[in-house]
Length: 481
Ligand code: FAD
Ligand code: 2HG
Ligand code: ZN
Picture (spheres, rainbow, N blue to C red):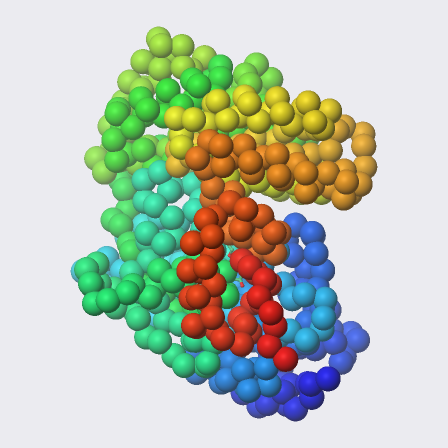
């Protein structure tokens, strides 16, 4: 048994008593740090440690490394795959970055912003907008997720079709290594071919290689207008055809293209009846489009009108609305963003965050839906997501009126196998944007080549030989004693 009290004493000396929370005081509620967003698992931490500076992070990691105590980096704790909460051993330190929430600098000429990793995404978007810039990373959890978590998971969201995911928006990182050394890679350079690009190792590594403490992100000029349209489409094939047409008509103006299945929209109507959801009863699928225009609202509107008229002539769209103003646009986006929340209200569910080449999505869905319904009669399919970049949230819920917890216990493994095998047959990925966390660890090695797995393990061993950084996430390795 390790002497944890010595370590706790050291941690308190580094960050201050108020910023080390433990179970010693039975009145301290650690749920916010120990329970994952989806309520899939509840862990028990040795301590929650909340540093305020990079130097404090480095000192905390050094102290933990010396005590061979593992660390779970945590941002907003909005992750979908149980990657940011401790296990049940009571021996892990949760390193929460949320006190590190300062903008360090904004370089208008270089179109970059350099920030602390604990900055909440929405606060950053707002800061950038005030300065006349767009930070084009947007997800429904933006009110609480952090830029460190976004980079740790290589988050996607709703603007990937135009701007790429978090990786593509990041020009530099500051990282504290597993040994407690600080790597300052906050260059802001768009070109730098001086050997391996270490930034890309840490992005998407889910806290398993080191702790991101700062980041330099790309900015874009604010568009003159961001217009939203919402369309009913008769099939997924038609949605894909509409996407192709939207690329041609709007070109780089196409900054969002989301798809929503009827059952998913029905959940929003059920749990948030105050929301007006257009066309959902008449159409099996609806699509949300965003057109960002550098000229004017009139120009953006005429682009959308041209697109939707042609799409209706071709039969790709059966009905459509273009938001008249910002309030209407927000209401339409709110429908889309409410789907995960409505699903959470509905209860436990199985999530598949998958990507498939866009052209093959309709065939994938048709084939996989049929297989699921054959093998799990009555299962309910909640299908929605970022069709513009080939990412579906292909979720499954227990049959109506049945026990969701029991359905998960009895079927989750075999259902995942069925879906992931189908994903692999269609040349897709079993995790498009949420990561592997704990929930997909067992599956990863079945869907990545042994060569790729060996290289990943070698990188992990080289950077974190004692396996102290978020152990058990992405893959399982023997734990240091
Ligand atoms: P956390 O949940 O705290 O952590 C996530 C992972 O990153 C963990 O493995 C953690 O150890 C690691 N990590 C956290 N901070 C650091 C750091 N500083 N250094 C190193 N590793 C770190 N995701 C998408 O990609 N697209 C979406 O559209 C999307 N929509 C969502 C909608 C809702 C309603 C919710 C609840 C979640 C959604 N997510 C989405 C998932 C989640 O919000 C993202 O994964 C987000 O990037 C996580 O950020 P976070 O700060 O909450 O990270
Ligand atoms: C989204 O796109 C998120 O809304 C969550 O990635 C997806 O709940 C989900 O399955
Ligand atoms: Zn998503």
